[in-house]
Image 1: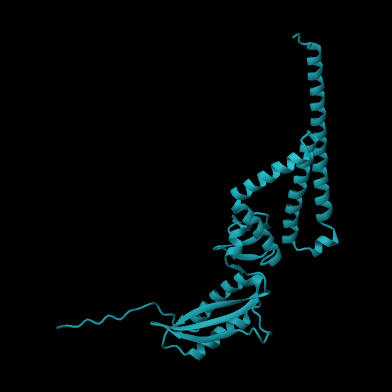
Image 2: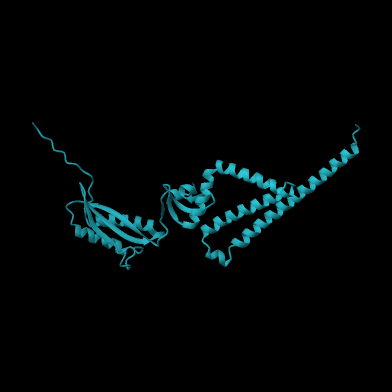
Length: 277
């Protein structure tokens, strides 16, 4: 049987032209898809929209990630269709791949579900200072799979969302005021009433200590009789943003006040009695 090389060549050329046309169409869809994704995210989440100002930053960032993921899936499916793959085949492959991926990525899918749970329960917002899984830091991002904290020493801690929702979360920024506790030790020979007056003067003289709220007054009491000392507990309230500076100030000023008033600050001690036979 004689081969018609001219027909073979023509089929090859037609196939190349058809493939090139599909590749160009797929490239155009990709470029347009990228532009649409950027446009949609900018229009919905642009900085100056009133809707965005009312929307919590945590929810906004999470929604941006979810919307981007959905739009990219649509673009990828459109590109595959442009390359000539039938939609039915795509659905079959995606169903099979979805089942396999769901089994292989159970942990990641649980992180995604936990991400939605964080948005619904809203235990913290961007900028809150929290403790999660033993890590202290400021929340800087709540993503689809993980939450990112910035620690006080400027490290980033990335915690899977499933661990965030499965453990205790301590939010230090939810309330406007925080209570400062300072424990002091004085010698047994000290007059507790005099010590309490000295410490109370320190509390009420600090400008950042809350004094006018009847539900959060400064507090100084004798709270325990230790082995070598009397335990004096001082409590005061300050705004969350000034918690640590105020606490350090009170510790330093209470120590100075005790020294200035010649109130003895004891060291741990033990009496040893030797018996002679």
